Image 1 (cartoon, rainbow, N blue to C red):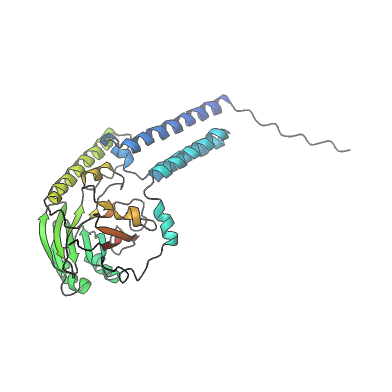
Image 2 (cartoon, rainbow, N blue to C red; image 1 turned 45 degrees about the vertical axis):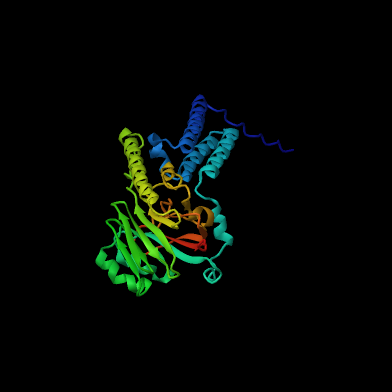
Length: 342
């Protein structure tokens, strides 16, 4: 008879293993609670944390949870992973856009099916100073192109008619510009934005804004207090820029349909957007399809470029499209403008 094989006896956890597991569990829980508070309240002092998309912190949290699995703390590890998935779902930027991207394809007949509404294709692009990046948008047959880090006026004049036709309008600013298929009248201009009034081919007038807010300090040394102060000061400055814009918009006629687009240089859930008129909606939230992140062009991880519109517009489809010769992706928004009330 053969003797039965003895089962290996599991090695008991050492005291060091238990200490490491408890410290890791405490760090995981504190990180989850702290980040949740930061993303719910979004205080200026924590802008260095909330500038990152939630999935970045989700990855850090899951990494800590996997360390607990290796330390044989399976129950707590699984509970931790569940909490981090909850964090991701609650604070992710428009997760429904991924679902729409799977089943809602572009409708080539959206213009002809507009009925009495006016179809408009609006493109926002940070061109990184490249006229080639703007000229490459010809294939999309836009009605309005909002440009940030704009090429020179001479370059824009050279490409405006081949891009948008003989009646193309141009409003050039310091850092932002607007190209339109029809003439455009300047209304206001600052370092951060330009505002123009466009008369559409139907005779309808709309207000259009192209903007670029102050860029972030591009720092990740969160252990350094100067990093936290830099992001706090940047948010305060961006808030002031949007307040200035809102004051200018308040001077416009209340019945003038409004489009605001550009490079906001901030997380799309940032509290600075409360400074904008409440009727200005992020078109991607209701009609975005696919992965909407716009920076960087090659590996997009954050949606800092947006097209916002008033309640007189119905967003049909909004996508982030790979661009040429720039570090941003283009935001392409198909909108329907409701008929003018008599």
